[in-house]
Length: 618
Image (cartoon, rainbow, N blue to C red; front, side, top):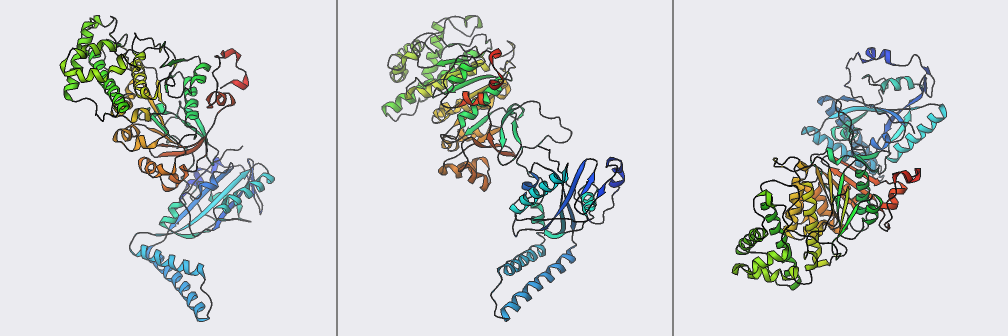
């Protein structure tokens, strides 16, 4: 497939340029001109001029023509009309249209809809020009197509005319004037064809061929991007979507899609491709969907709810010697206990709202006393001692009269049906390039708490200082934290706050947070959810339910057309939004990646790299 080269030249009439003289040495040594084409040492070329336009066009209407897999030189020559000349031209045009309508009426003929529409448009344009809201220009649009042979040139010309006809543009070859046509489409500032039409400001602005299905290339002088991964191919185009989350203002992303749109498939591909670049991955997996992926890359799966898996929320991070470590652990325990109480209250329908001020003060006293009884104080030398358990914290609450209610409400987590997760020292091992925290074996009532525990363990691994004296964490290695089905946390205030904290602090620790959810309302209807979106530089929207379209359009600043497209996107199609950049793409994968990422993939033993043949190479 030949590459496409687009050159756009815009000049004012009467401008004298020496560009032709400057570029004389860069052109071909000679040219053979015929009535149908120009032949040079590089092949054949033919020029087409746009001679007729539809009544209405959309923005970037030239883009559809220029996106063909052809080598095309495009030029738009613009000549502004003086105000007096524009007014006189409009008066003559309106007079011709009005006289035509009167003659038809005098003969008793039916009105011509095209004449009526033209008269109304001319009247509206005259009004806008009179108020200074618009101006008139003469403009010519020329396209030169190149091919190596005359047969290929004829085929390319047919493709070009067909694409133009699809947008109601009429292209005509400039027969016997192809040399002048080629000169007019070179960056010389010369229009030797002078085939022009009158445009107003709005119509001419829509002709600018500066819109594209592709993401913007680096500006002149900027180095090309060196990182990034493949997301897919542009929808309706021939380009690829190659995106680097690590080069954005922050490294976070959000993926919103209804069930079955392919969001888990997309994030699995992103995980695989980031692993090949040395990124550590941690995944919170509510439905056990990432087990096959973990098995393929020899990662680890932590199955919360398994009788052998224990999590101790009072465990201090090993190797962390920051002086505020104990205080930060106490603050997390406040968040965790609030979620536990909310789960109990929801289960029993008590209608309570977490803890009051007295309860929080009592909990704070109990936390410090629990650590003190275990011999752990503010002295870092005591932090290696065995950490107390949740039952020890409950015992301290029993001794405080102000905390009796808290102790009673925590009973299901300490000695009841939900205690099996916390009744022994921590057994989780997260030393791996990929760690999947599976919540499938947890009851629904425990999943919110399980998600928070997994996030806390992940964050403790990310928030590790490289030097004992530094205050900010970060080991220097990139880490991607994937929270699938994030609505589990967003439905609770404390969980949403913790997620927002990670979103804001991840960048300084060389980490990125990928939030994946199928319920847009969980993010869009709460201030905390909106803040999570605002702190995600990479936003990916897949097929949405019709009821959520309006809310998604407002939250992400979509155009009406983009919003409508979200309701009709196919499986595996998405819209990537990042600031002013946005592109629709089809998710692309290799056969080996597809076998791992599909939803019905089965766990298999890790395959040694030496055993991967060409067909299995990712």
